[in-house]
Image 1: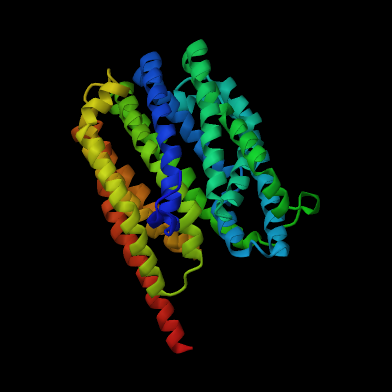
Image 2 (image 1 turned 180 degrees about the vertical axis):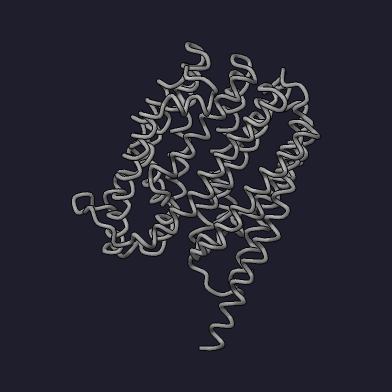
Length: 431
């Protein structure tokens, strides 16, 4: 079916409309899976799944050295410069080898400790050891995915995302039905293997065109440039997921594991629609901001992005809020009191979306200090607010903390982004 002219002429809308179809399919399948998971393992099982997902997210950063955004940036800027790309991928190769080796060793020999930290017992240490074996697949998938995003191959990205999700969903359902909670955890661990296989199958020709595998060397010509992205990824991914793990433990200790599962279920619903924006950030926003150098052009692009994305998300979130009781009844019928969390979570997510668009200027211009400062501020605010509010409002305090944290975060990021342009103007005037 041919897209309307106004969509075809707006690249962001074009990507958004294509993504909408993929996200729609994902959302439908996700609702079915989440309902099945809720019925079979309950809140306690969902809390355990949340802990493992956080670990897997940490590994997507650590195993690849945290250079995903660096790959997106340099591929988008130097896609025609094969020599520069070879330097990039040789450096990335070193990051992958070191990151994967260190991660595997820690996971394998520290399996008992990690299992106790995540699940408060050693029963799942064998799964942690399996994660250690899967590590190379995680790192390769992350790096290759950076190439897809850097080239803005949004059609191929949509295919990869859809097919890998469908296969992973089938595996999850099969393992869940046959092996209950341990099966669900096993399926999550194996998912990166499926994602990498699908990516290579669809994107193989493009990968060998841009990555000359035979010429890769164990050298790091872009070490300094990519280390900045590693540091930023450590803060935004590793620390974020550690904070979420600790907050889930905090809820368990202050309230119950059932409440921890309820909050995890709320974040699952949030992630279902926020995943839509994440792909837009890496496919469109980051490459676009990387190519903009004046405040005037930045403001113009920022307004255009906001005018396109915010109304779509705003309307969608209002619909979700109005139908919240039905959403809970459909997906998590036994999760009593979950509908109270929606207003705080949705308002926080809306402000988060507006903030993350701005924040990608830090990544595009490699403003490491600004990025690290704002991310640390965000995480500290979340942890402190959650710790205080849980003691007063219970699990609802966590989603309240989510909103308050992003209000402050947005104000600070907005100020720092435009301070950057004012500094650039002063430098230009001096020159």
